[in-house]
Amino acid sequence: MSGPGVGFEYPPQPVAWLKRDALLFANSIGAKADELHFLYELHPDFAVFPTYPVILPFKGTTQEVIDFYAAQKAVKIPSVPEFDYTRVVDGQRLVQFLKPLPTTSEGHKFEIRSKVLGVYDKGRPGSVLEIQQELVDANTGDVYSRAVGSSFFVGQGNWSGPKGPATENFPPPKDKKPDATFEVQTQRETALLYRLNGDYNPLHADPTPGKKMGFGGDIMHGLFSFNSTCHGLLRSIGGSDPKNLKEFQARFASPVLPGDKLVTSVWRTGEVKDGFEEIRFVTKVEGKKVCLSNGRALVKVVEATKSKL
Image (cartoon, rainbow, N blue to C red; front, side):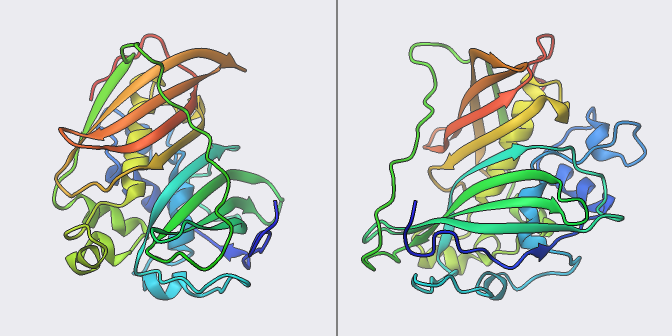
């Protein structure tokens, strides 16, 4: 596919993490005390939760707080407008898990390699930027994860760009009860903890940007909902074993407010390839709208596992 900006490659971005970062991430997305392999560095099976790479483009190599807006504007994509990153939200995201992450990046030379897949003009509502990001060990060339994600720039359309292709949908089975359900209760402080992973967008701490965007105030990170739902899914049907997760994706359908309860319904499709079953899921804010739609994952289902959430 061709179009404005398509194929543009960002400069490789060095990234790094410590065991402490892995522990913080697991805590911030709701790992439980009976999952010490995510929460205790001396556990014999200590592991980084698989979706951790989604935070690395924000974090980079630093342990310090980052100026989110300045970091996002650092690279200009040719042939497309210069978008305002004070008015951006997540669109959708797919992550493929190719190799288990080491518990620390020490001894490696990791970098994020990003390229533009498309920039789409959705008219008055805004514009969509779709990017592929790979976590690569530059010393070996090994790719550890691959993410395809889109950002939606609110009210920044009508620049005569391409409308973009229709997205593929993965609805849950009709007239079938969920095979599992689980809940995640957020608190007013949940986003303030999650942002310490490296995603310091003021939208999730300061009510001012959210009011300007029509949300009424600060909202939760879309990637908190994404990551916490992935954790709940792996815990409820995958035995909390990171090796049992191959892919995870969802569309960010509506904002979540701090204090909302997220309720996820999970359906097994029975379609299994190489031991991984295709799973469909939908996450709603209790009593309100769907916040994660188009949910799909590839999971090795552990039959004896029952949700403890």
